[in-house]
Image (cartoon, rainbow, N blue to C red; front, side, top):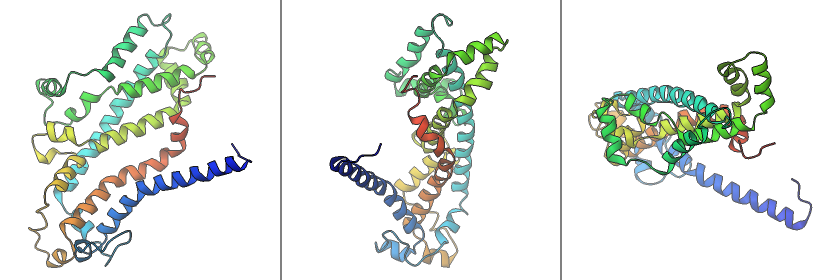
Length: 293
């Protein structure tokens, strides 16, 4: 929409200023962390680093990429994201497709829908959640990080609303041609729902990658911590791995603060790399199901 009046132009300028300010608030802390990670230990310790590295050095990243604990936790997080996203997306698509049907073609559809929606507002509590996972024998395994949240109901609601906006004639004509539900789902609904699936997929990937609390609670051994759980322990507690280093030059250029900054930036890097590939679908997917033609 193009505004031609003075008030409209002023409104547009104010919007741009507000959005730029919000964007800077989001990106400046990340830039500062990156600047600290590339600075020397002396400059970082003295608080001389703002938005640009001081005494540029790669030593912090060299040290981090040699840490077995960091690499192991990165591997656990990658396994969690791959398995968790596959499980979440598969169940979300199948459940969203089923619940998108009218009650006359799916008997009890409303009751099933309410059964799942109520879980958004009501849960059993932290202790029953933990006991169920324990009794299922999932503690200290990758399944404990994936299976308890295997059905993200909020994503199911988003997707079923998007499915309901697709023309009914496509499904009816496919039935006339002899197609079954599986064929309709995989050859009609999914190709037409790429914006919605990309948006939900991004939410799922970010959710698994950023989760840290369940790793602390459900993993008995720090060796099995996902990356964010490991980073939480590093940020809260002092990283003593630097003290045990025998590289004198490393000790002179790396500090606990620069190590934390380097690990934090590396932890955010995979999501920053994934987002551009899904961005073209993201804006369209954000309004999925909001308008029905």
